[in-house]
Image (cartoon, rainbow, N blue to C red; front, side, top):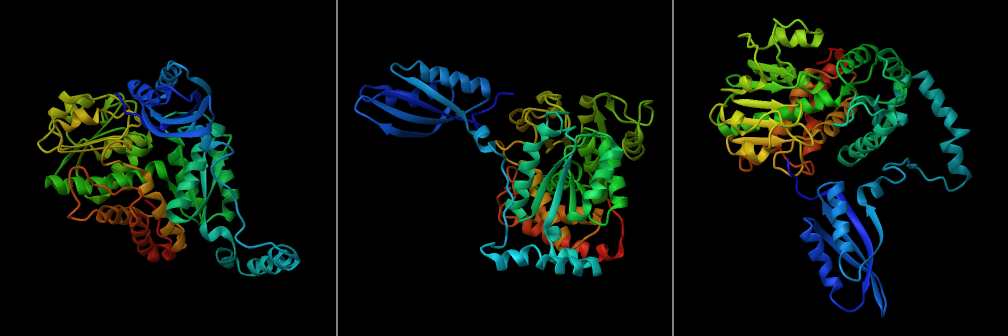
Length: 470
């Protein structure tokens, strides 16, 4: 699918041009003729003979960025000195840091923050362990844990390559909910080792955010940690996705005038995200769903079903449809894709019911081109930031954890997930609601607070009773 220039592939080209002549005026033309977009042009050094200029521009991808550089180099009199990838520059040295909240300006302050004064605080916690939330960072800390086995859409690239993503997740926690999150990248993909490692580091955290762990391993890791720990464990790839999908679908169905319990849904993807979306849709009142994986529809007659697929087969596809995805979308009111790129086309969407809803969430290339889907569907959402209706987990997880930490919750319940989805959907007012606005912007000031309040209220009773999770 063709893409437009994006800041994700933004470059700054430092070059020299003759002080006189037309070279300066030709720079912008050169970038635009190569299909790029100039976002800044700064003269950094001026002399009688030459000018040193930084040209910043957006490209579609790395090959396109190189084509832009080649075009600039072709301008008469231009000398290229340096090309900087702005995304890599942002990541130099990492994106997060630890800072002290208290000053350490003199011996008195040092003796209170550390020895000997800190010993009194440690002994107070030893006498009353509940004080750990009041007197330490535990009350506002989350561990972001990965094994690097399912990083973004990049696959099993390992813990070191996953670290930039986990840093980004920690930065989002801080930006959107003022939570201190810590990247924990584990050099193992053994379930027992992952569970034991998280168990023994858990005392320092108020919650565990599992991230980018592949299915079906992630299901067992989450289940076992929830049984072992007295702090909430939340796999964002599952439950964060499910919350935002349900919120968006709630509003999309309002746009087309349909009810969740009446619509027929086709879901592509039976992994971590797909299974969690399915469970939350059922909890919200959905009744008719067909799930497809790469082999086609999931049904009881298949002989390749593991425990997760068996659960799907037992709870969906009541008519026993055994065909492929294209057949499954015929007549469907809703298509939700959390699977693979380019698996449907416009002709497939045209076979759906009137006023269809299409959520093509594979990233960066959706299951069907959003532009093509819009020709046939009433509402279209993607996981991309360059189209309306972006289904982005950052709409959910910061507020969810803010509510869990504030409530000192020990579990994550299905009721909390439903409350979060309902609150997120409600951020979009009746006056704002429309085909191109079914979820708020990630920068909407009310999102995190609304989700946090809903989770906090839902957690208030359940955290004390110990009722179990979704």
